[in-house]
Length: 512
Image 1: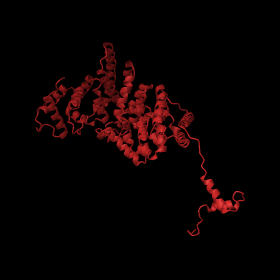
Image 2: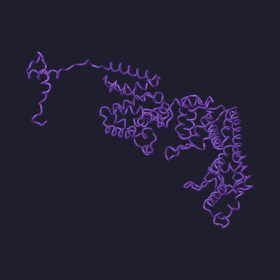
Image 3: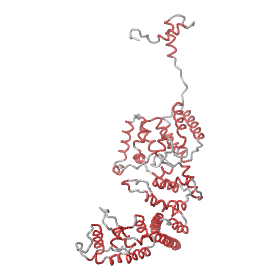
């Protein structure tokens, strides 16, 4: 249709009306046009939707969603939701359309997340996704920062808190959040994420967020973003069922899955067990210790944290110490012995015992408690030491440089149990096939730089393993010879070990 032949506005409507037998317009085109304009311009006034009406509809909608998913709110959840609603959400939920749209999204996406997320966090996140979708996308983009796992956080410790808020205001403005809504969105984010709350000048508690399975925890963040429990995560029902199976001693697929995840996703699973422990939930401590011990040397989870220092074995060490302290003292030696029945378990048992002893040594109990503590610790030391000696028996028939990594780890762990038995066994090997310098070269890694080959802590460990005086006596001729003497070992690593021992022998540590 060319511009010259295009019908004028309302032409179609005029023809319909004029062609319709009607006493209102007859065959008059002007009358038809006037009538059509009146229809378009009629204003229908609706009754005002008061704040009270909005509150009633919100309450009804929330009750319907909770009932649909068999949920109830605890007192603390009611308090948090009331704060979120009356401080930030009420002003945005003022029309039936906005309220129904919001709760419709909640009902449609809660699904399998029931019991796997914090319901208040889920409501807030759903509001952000529904009302501020581009701001919601920022959560994923800044996941590490918001969950406190960003490598950049330490460099920002000296910044004033308001700088962090200014940064978020800029981000949210760029995401299209209207000026009048900025403070409300930031307020909602502060209820979800500890770093935002800290930037507003409030205290933070990552553990409290994790215990409630909040989005601000790295262990639960992804659930809120994918509307479900990811394949690499373990649903709460499966987790709880696994713990019940371990407690009852009844094997099941859930327990098998938990132990598999404990090996491959160690840091997250140990944290989640720790969350339940902190919340006072009953845990099968003995069963967990016995089940985890054989896997200790086969943990595959990648290191986490700053510089990758939070390794899987360190995470297991912390959990094992907590679980052992949950057991009655008379029960601890037998559990540690069962743990030590495998070489990997023996290492975990020895390290766990040492951690518990170090903690107990810092306490000042009364004399009856001291006697009881010494009884169980002495028994545990003896039992674990016996198991380690059994695991290392085959190594005595091989050259020292043929020691395997697990055997080297066992030797180091032995010092945490019965030092006298350990010293006797090692010195006996020196009498038969091993040489002290070869053992030191095997035990001490050559790539400790920039750390010294032997520092004070290593020297104390060598004293527990071998006995420094016995070591100096056996190495006497080599230590007395000048470093460049032709009879001294010329290989770089043994030579550095000898020089370090010369220096330590010349300046023995002063007892505190």
